[in-house]
Length: 309
Image (cartoon, rainbow, N blue to C red; front, side):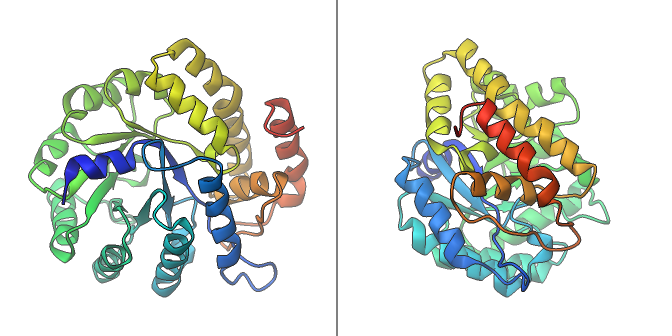
C-alpha cells in the first residue's frame, strides 16, 4: 500500500454521495446513483481534486443491509470507471459486518474505507484501537477514521498518536467539539495523516496542512467545488472564505432547519439533485418525507446563490 498515492487519491473535495431509493418501494435506485456519479466525473471531478464517499451518513447506511451496501459500492465503482477514488463507508456496531464490508471494499477496488466509532455504547480508546486494528487485519486497504464526537466517542490527540502505529490508517475525517482541539489536530498530525476537514473551517485547515474538505455542495455543484479547491490551493483564502459564505453556509442553515423536523442529511442532498435535473427521491425511515415542504426553500437557496437560474 502506497500511502502517498492514496493521499493523492483522497485530496480535494470529499463528496458524500446520497443513497437513492425508488418511490413507494424504497428499493435501491442504483441506476440513479450511477447517473449521479457519472455527472460528477463528467463535470471535472477527478483524482487530484476530489474523491467520493458512498455508504456514509448522507448515504443512510443505518437503513441499509450488508448486501445493499455492497451493491451500492459495486455500482458506483462501475460507473466511476477509475476516474476518481471511491471511499466506502463501513460504519457498524457489528464487528463481523464491518469486516465483511472492509473485505468487499478491498475486492472492489475502492481506494479506502471510512470507519467510524461503534455507536450506542461509546467505546474506550482501547476499544477503538482494537476496532481499527481488526479492520487492518481483515484487508490491506487504506482507512479514513471518521471522528464522530456527537455519537459518544470523542477522539483525542493521544489516540491519533496511537493510530500512527496502524499503517492502513492514512486519513482522518476530522471534527472536534472545540476550535482549539481541531487546530491542535491539524498542527500536530497533518504531516502524518491526510486530514479531511469535516468542521467547515476549510481555510484554516488548508493553511495548517489539511488536504481535503467534506463538501456536500459538490453533489449538485461540482464545477463550483473544483473552483473552490483551486482557490484553496492557490492560497486565495479571502476569496475562498467568501465562497463558504455564499454556498456552504446557506446549505447548513437549511440543513439545521430541516434537522429539527427529521434526522439525516439525505433529504436536502436529494432535493438539491432534483433541482439540477438528476434523480433524488425519498429517504428511508426512520427519516420522514418532508420534501414537499422544503422543495421551494431548496430551490430558493440554489437560485439565490447562483447554482441554478
